[in-house]
Length: 317
Image (cartoon, rainbow, N blue to C red; front, side, top):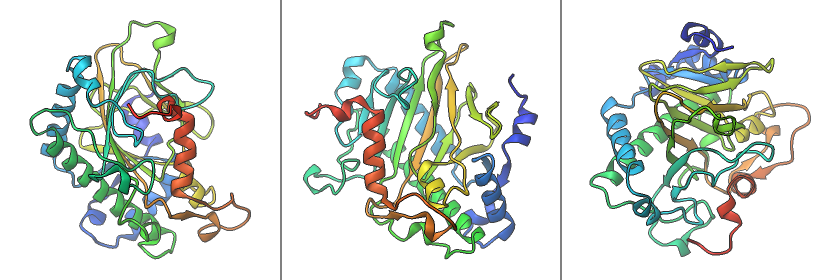
């Protein structure tokens, strides 16, 4: 059963992060982030510091791109470095769910030469020939990445760790941004989910929803909770790597997107991950048994190969 906005706010905490954005040490805010990261693993954040003009410019550029003819979008189709346009049906987040009914445009920190890449998820961006598209996209990327760094410093403080514990290797992070477009559906069962139930792969995800709605998270008891848009907020959620890094103390919550029936849905996303050589070892944070240490780069390589069919193809588009 769907929840009202008020009920969702109770289930998914709303945390004011203004102090962290200002660079202050605020134990109350940090503890609130830690508690929400433990249960339910999703957080609404307000006073996040990303200007509305940046969000609206990015959203406008994304709408223009997705409305372009398929031939235009195909000129920047996704590369083997996970940069560019990903067609509907080319992502499948789990073996037991249908392919996602969404299209995406993905980019990251710019490098000019694929030969200099130190990881398959780092390569040249593929920009469409649209006025100011690149500028607006990078403004969202830079702002959301700065926010993720502020939040991770706060979370580390709440765990009595050095504020930069999760940020020791971030001069060449594997962070990725994306615009995600969900087309309205006609109500058939096979079109029910724009994205089926899944967990995010990396450390931390920042999501800017529009006003269409459709995001749901699985609560600790197995119930599906609506996460409706709340004006002035972003949604942050724990990814698999952060759950692993905290030895399971933090929860990477399964979530899904119900395909919209009243209009298209557009999301702005930032998936924050540190440098590929960063070792994720739960013994550094938690106690007791932990998963085997693994580098951020190796873990993402494994998960992306499972989820994206194009990465199993030999030739770059």
